[in-house]
Length: 71
Image 1: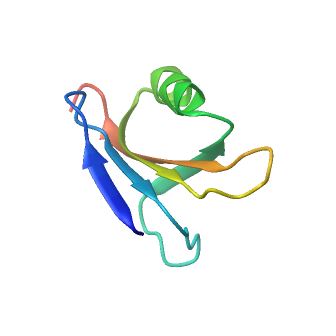
Image 2: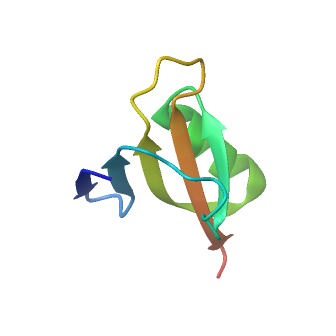
Image 3: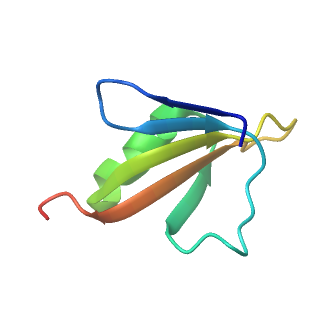
């Protein structure tokens, strides 16, 4: 990953490649950052990282989750 940013919301933002085989955390793909937030809200999990794969696909964003909101 080439760029790492963290805004005041505590979510890490990265750009670059994503390897689903080596990723041990809970993840999902989405069309946008807003959909990542919606998935987190609907599942009760905490969104900790958003990876923009910069690919030409319908779902270029990878959402990384950790634990539950009430932890």
